[in-house]
Length: 199
Image 1 (cartoon, one colour):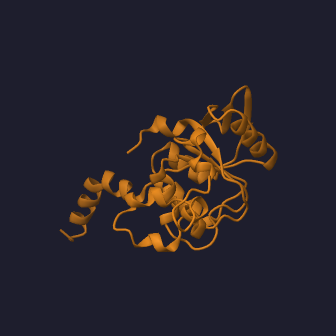
Image 2 (tube, rainbow, N blue to C red; image 1 turned 45 degrees about the vertical axis):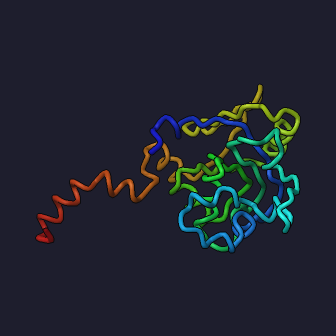
Image 3 (cartoon, rainbow, N blue to C red; image 1 turned 120 degrees about the vertical axis):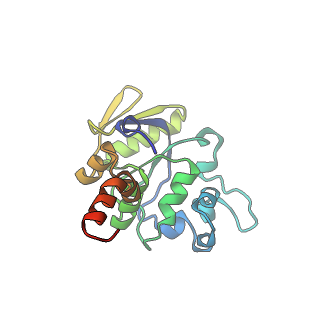
């Protein structure tokens, strides 16, 4: 599990994938949902956007040499709409992306991202466009995201962003993962089960 500090500040290079209403079927096409483990999903992220049917590259932003290894995905409004497949944020994470910045997010997609520890940041269009332009002209630009203070630094610019307060608090206190919460509380759960006569 990531530690507290990893969620207070996240840094990395960015990549801009343009478009409103990017749905989960575009993020991870349905035919890839038959995988045995989520670990297999990374290479299939945005597959039909990135490759021709014969596998030839379409030169999608994710595949451009200057963006290889980018960890912060920037997009536009209503990101993650469509079906509620958990595979979409899993594919984003397994590809190596740690944060998603957009104008807005579909509710279920947002919840699935937070459970995985992927911060979803909402930025105004003007700021996102300016950030995307900076990355276009200097792909090596480092983006530093301060979750606690809700600010993003890139070059000599400081931007503000919004997050759902419940999601922000869950990330900062490491309570975003329900399974991890149960594992941490297993001794207390056992004690309660004994008191109630279940054990």
